[in-house]
Image (tube, rainbow, N blue to C red):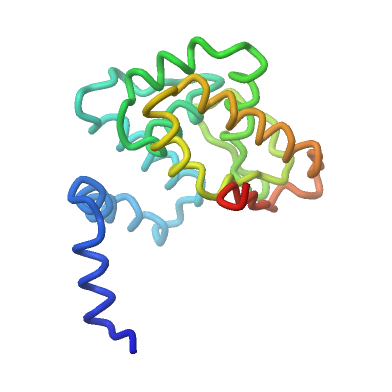
Length: 179
C-alpha cells in the first residue's frame, strides 16, 4: 500500500541530485504564481532563471523570435546545452521556425512571452509529452536530428489541430511514448 513516507523516499532517492536540486531551487520562482503574475510571466521568469544559473554559463538570456524555444530546449535536455544550441542554429529555417513558434505558444488565453517575438496568441498550444526524455536520450547522441524529429512532430500535430483564435487558451497533448 503506497504511503506518504514511501512516496517521499521515492521522490528524494529516485531523482538525480542535479534534478532534485534544480526543482527545490525553483520554489522561489514558482511562489510568484500567487503574486498576481500571469502563468506565462512566471514560466518566462523560470526559464530565464534556469538560463542565467546554467553551468557552464550560456551567456545572456536570448531575446527575439526563438528565445523561448532556446530556453525551453535547454531545460528539456538537462545537459549537452552548448551542442544543443549549436544544433538549433544549424537547423533548416523551416525546422527552426516551427520550434520557435510552437514552443512559444502559451496555452493561456491572450498571453504571450515578453522576450519572444511571437505576437500570435492563437491556439491550441501543443505539448509533446515525453519530449524532454526524448531530447535527453536522442539529443545526447544527435541533437540536430532530435530537434528535426521534434519539429516534424510539432508540424504533424499542427496539421491535426490548426491554429484558431478561439483556441487561444487551449493545449493539446501529443504522447510520443506510444510512437
